[in-house]
Length: 269
Image (cartoon, rainbow, N blue to C red; front, side, top):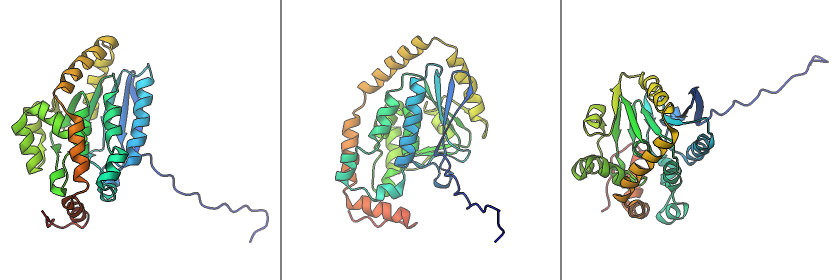
């Protein structure tokens, strides 16, 4: 050992932030989901951090528009299946699982825009549906595949999607569980416009800047009126009660185990 030379211990690697917040233009806050190794799945940690950033953006008078985005290949894969596997019906009900996300998004009076690249599945698609406008890449896909693991959409998917596209399109997407391409989402009115892959956020920033230059009060009141009409056609509490019930079924246990085990489920019912 050399005297007089301090030997420092290696510093532990910093854990990447699961949500990245930035302000790339005046009045525009971008919240980017950042769990690339998990396809931006909605862990409770990610939801908590996201809601913290959302509250901060909502309270900041300099922020007029909020953009929610993900990565180039995945907007969001949905709920974290490993966390779901540990939840039974009663625990899901007591935790009010995903209700915090729904309530937090509904409480934002500023325009919310989803900028979607890649896949938006399950709770990820529901997160996009909670926004006021959805813009997407030509190569993106949207789906609610929960039935394939013995569950149903529980963050407003059965309600918002039905309001947006009608009963039969919603039945097709939810009962079959197969994602639809961006072109079909555009035809259904879910998506406001499509852009080239890798160019969505840049184009959405231009839209957001246009909104940021508009009357703050007029935008807020118009949004509130439209959301009120949408709320009248939904029963989120009923959906959520069925969602929590499904957590206690043997089909959910088998479906989640099959998903995690990368095998086909053998439904007990």
